[in-house]
Amino acid sequence: MSRFKSAGQGGSLAGLKTEETEPTVPSGLLKAAGKSGQLNLSGRGLKEVPKEVYRLNVDPPLEAQQNVSFAESDRWWEQTDLTKLLLSSNQLTQLSDDIRLLPALMTLDLHDNQMSSLPSALGELQELHELRLSHNQLSALPVEVYSLNKLCSMTLQQNRLESLPEELGQLKNLTQLDLSNNLLKDLPSSLGRLTSLQKLTLSHNKLSALPDSVAQLKNLKLLDCSNNQLTGISASLSEMLALEQLYLRHNKLRALPKLPAPALKELYVGNNHIEKLEAEQLSCLKAISLLELRDNKIQTLPEQISTLSTLTRLDLTNNDLSTLPASISLLPDLKVLLLEGNPLRGIRRDLLKKGTNELLKYLRGRIKEEPDQAEEQQTAMTLPSQARVNVHNIKTLKLLDYSEKQAADVPEELFDAAADTTVTSVNFSKNQLTSIPPRLAEFVSSLSDINLGFNKLTCCSPDICKFLQLTNIDLRNNQLTDLPSEMKDLTKLRSVTLIYNRFKSFPQVLYDIVSLETVLLGNNQVNGVDPHRLMKLINLSTLDLSNNDLLNVPPELGLCSSLRCLSLEGNPFRAPRAAIVARGTDAVMEYLRGRIPT
Picture 1 (cartoon, helix red, strand yellow):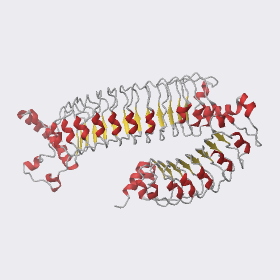
Picture 2 (cartoon, rainbow, N blue to C red):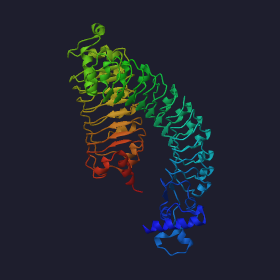
Picture 3 (cartoon, rainbow, N blue to C red):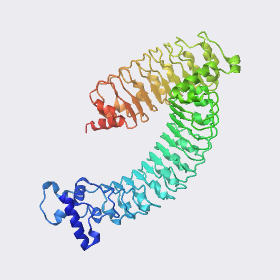
């Protein structure tokens, strides 16, 4: 208590000499910063940065000047250069050119101040990794800022930027850029040169178009263009191979963009002017999990909505839908279907309030009870098991479905009905099949999705390798112990589901399929995995090894940088501990990397 009091008294005495020397930062804080290399002056009501802060690396501390003896731990000549300076939530209106006296800075936080300009000296902070400038009054940045070669993150939201220069493209190491809540009407074409960018936030501006060069952002995972004036999205965005989340809410779009971005999992296009969904637009969304279409003017849903096999959440709130295709209930992973605020006929309001499960159950019942009469008379066939050949599924959805029949084989009539049709998906799950039906070979050139889960397969035929268009194969709940080496020829395969089988080791052929993104091997007896071979699967983002016989987890698994979801629970290993595993993938990966011998 006395220390702060004396500091206050010293301040008032100094004020009699000159206002400039008034200490606004406790000397103890500066002393600690000299040791740690970090100084936090956030929320102190500062109107300017005290000079002693700028000179922290230049001037020896007071003890040295006064030649006062001090403990060995306080040796001033062993001071650390300042690497982190936090000045947020003050009342700063400017930054002095003396900022150049802190050349070791890696983080500079100036957000939530009143700054309308920045000094060109910022460009001399060549070690800067993170620059936080949000919630100020900046209308431009000094051109020297764009020469900060090591800059990884720059946040500029809530400023007054109306344009950005072409020099922006020089920030080659930038991984995160937030330009939201500004006055931007267009973007420089050099934006496309920021090839390390993973997250780009452009929401709440005045953009009417995006530069075509955006398509060059091959590592971008999240793009937020909400609350702008976009009337269309360039088809070139489909070249963004890493894009997973795209936000286009509150724009002026009249159509769903045609976006065959292969990794796109979440698409938000609520609050636009979309009136019609085209089948072609939907068929592009191969990996989509969340599709938000709320608050548009959509009148009908095409049957192709039921081909989005990875869809888990569909929001159609507040549209103009009067009917709903019953086939939507065939979506295998759909967990949430939101339909409030539509003039739906034939679906009671109370049913909508009962939730997704009840609604889907009702729609599935409609498929069985209300087949199209004309189609029924002309094309329906009755099989020995009394199951109907669903010609609608075959012709419109390109789906061959003979699931949940507990049958030992698939009737010939089903294949006959699909003759001369481009079948892309097959669902023969929940039967008693002991081998892959040979007539599947009739669709070898078109089949991309095979579901043979819940059968009695003891081996997987090498013939599977002939399906070169295959992207997903589901073999869960069988009796498999290995996979054929010929599967390495399946160069488009993205997802393999092998849970609840009898694998005792990681199937060797999977190490050779570089296109793999998802491998689900939980609930087997796998006792080991080769991290060095896994590292070569550069697209692998999900790996489920839960409930197996892993006695140890190789630390090098932490170097598999593409992994975003790693499931290891339910194995007998002792390290990492259960508490670390429970914290999720990032914690496990960090732990493993820390265990790698140096």
